[in-house]
Amino acid sequence: ETTRNAISGGLLALDRHRDQWERLRTDPALLPCAVEEMLRYVTPIIHFTRTAMEDAEVHGVQIREGDKLAMFFASANRDDDVFDDPFAFRIDRDPNPHLAFGIGQHFCMGAHLARLEMQTVFHHLLARLESFEVTGPVERLNSAVNGGIKHLPVRCRLA
Image (cartoon, rainbow, N blue to C red):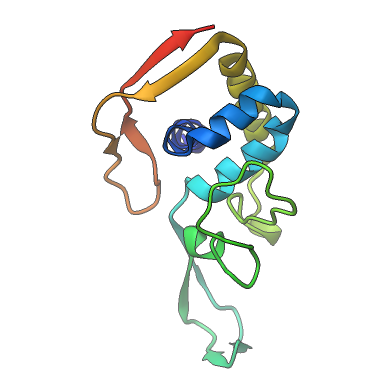
């Protein structure tokens, strides 16, 4: 589900940032970096909640054992203390320490497979498409957890 959402979201980002699509077509070696930027920019999971196991302080805020906390991935992936120009979609962003797959013991077990699947899909799209365009309204999933696309009408021009 999340890989599918990252792929459709990545395609939408490339449609809305045509210069990045053209750059990727011109230089397919940027694909691994482009996939990382799609993951950061799209951020398929909206949030996870956790329960604090012990008292702690984070950036001057007291957290007590038992407090419920939420991590909003899109916020973390647009932190201007971490990312230069965090709201821009740049397929050459490096470094790109996004948290789309989580962190620590909650890091996604399927992260490597998801990256490989995304690279494979976009590798084939780059080889087969001269261009593409979104031709209608984007319908998003109605979910508090998955930030995905339910319907993305696209017209393609084959290479």
